[in-house]
Length: 269
Length: 170
Image (cartoon, rainbow over all chains, first blue to last red; front, top):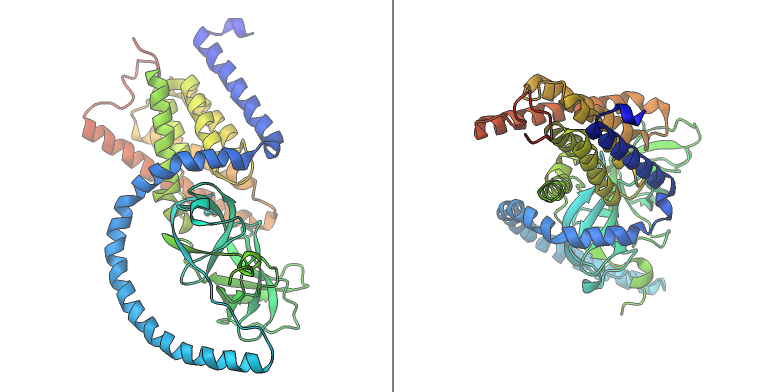
C-alpha cells in the first residue's frame, strides 16, 4: 500500500503515524513520567525569556500603578493606625480568655512570570523559588486576597496552583457568620468559583465575605477568598450552590506575595 | 538544520506569547488559540511533514506546561498540522477566505478536543459550545488580519506561488 504513494507522502504518513502513536502513548502513561522534573527544566529555560517579554508591559504598568499605590498607601496608613488600636484591644481580650494571639503573616514579594492553562489559567510560574526560601505548600496572595498555593519549587522559580484549578479546594468560612464550606472552582456548566458543602440550614447572603478558615491546615486563617455573588440550589438538591466573586483579580496578576503555610509558620518566632 | 532552528524558534515564540500576552485575554474569557494558528501557518507554508512535526513538538511543550494530560495538545496539533499540510497543496493558500476557514475550523477542533478533557457534565454543552465558537471566531479574525497585514507589509506572497508545492524548494 505504502509503495503506491510518492516518497514525500510516504514520509509524511510515516511521521504522522509515529507522532500519533507517541501522543497516544503519552496520554496513556503520561502520569507515570516525572512531569514535575520535566516542567522544572522547562520553567528554568523559559524564565529568562518570560522576564524579557514582560519587561515592556511591566514598565508601562509600573507608572500607572505607582500613582494608584501612593493614594492607597496613604489611605491604608490611616486605616492601619486605627486597626493598631483595635488590634491591641483584641490582644488584651484574647489574653484574658487565654486564647493564643493572632500572628501577622510573613510576606515575600515575587513576580508572576507566566500563566498557564486553557481556557482559564490554572497555574502560574513565579520568579522566585528555593533561593528566597519558598517551599511547596506556601500560600500565594495579593493585597486583595488568596491566589493559590505553591505546588512545585525549583531553584529560582516556582509553580503555583491557582484557585481556578478544579482540583484545588480551600477550607473557608463566611467572615461575619462563621458558616463553613469549601471554595472550589468548577468549569461546568460555566466557569465559577463555588462555596460548596454548605447545607440549607446555614444562611448565606449575597455580598458576604468568605475567608480561609485555616481548618485544612493548608492555608493560614483569615485570607479573603471571595464575596458571595449568587446563592441557589445545587443540582443534587442536598446543599446550596453558592457562587463567589474571587477576592484577588486572577486576570491581572503581576506581583504576588508568598506566605508560609500554617505548618511552616508555626515554627516561626 | 535551518528548518529545525526556525521550528524551535517559532515554538519558543508561540509558547512565550501564550503564557504572557494571550493568557491575560484568556483570563477574561477570550481565548486566542495561538497553538492552532501557528500550526495552521506552519503547515500551510511547509506542508504535511513539517506541519505534523511542528504540531507535535508545539503540542508536547504545551502539554508539559499544563498540569494534566500529557499528549492532549500533541495529538490534536499533529493531526491538524498533517491535515492542513495536505490541504495546502490543493488550496489557494494566499486567499484570506481560505486562511479564515482553516484557522476557524482548526481552532474549533483543537478547542473542542482540549475542552473535552474537562467536560464532566452534559448540561455544560451550551457554555462549551459558546466558548469554542468565541475562540474560533476571534482566532480566525485576528489570525487572518495578522496574515493580511504581514502580506501587505512584506509586499510579497507569504506562502509562495500557488503552483509551488508547500515545503518544496525548486
